[in-house]
Length: 234
Length: 32
Image (cartoon, rainbow over all chains, first blue to last red; front, side, top):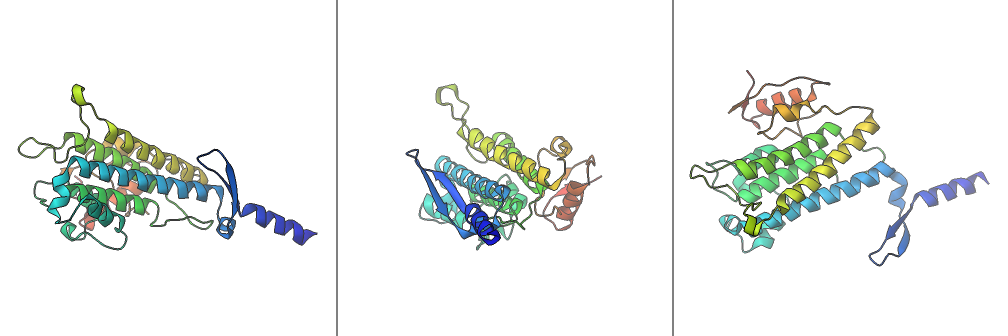
């Protein structure tokens, strides 16, 4: 009887129910769910959404700045996005090994002549990879650091600020993004960055709660124009 | 290079990370 009860608990723990677009629910059983807590599933979904949001921003930036993917000698925008998708296996040669904040900062440097969208988004994507400890799925024994997630969210804020304010010596923005012209208003970049920030902040709070810690908000006001380190946090 | 001032709170983990990133050449900042 006891073994039957254990068996039933394990089977039920391995079940997941999803709702399809048509509103119907579908229950599936997967052994991997035995090793996942609810927080692990939240982390899985948060990570997926953050990466999808950043890839959407990359796509939108390439649409507004098509000259950038041409600088890398690529055939089209899709090839440029594929380079970003393969970031965990390949560095971008024009970044000379820079990743995370160092790569993102290159997008706003006069001295940098390469693809600025790639520099910015490669930097932000590798930063988000580091915030999620370079894992694609989370299990019971995996730990996350709330400060890495929090710093990553603040760095999205820094990226938005730099996109709107940093200028070349000629007074032009380094990259076109939001459009403030009343006749052709477009704040979709701001909106998508905001969504990514919200997901990261939410995850940071969930992890802080699990780790029994509080998040410090002081650094945000102190450092507003540099990308905060993520990988270097212990 | 940017001059920054850090107000330490909590465990000081961000200060440690900023110093480590600067030492590794990943962050161009000056801590006066």
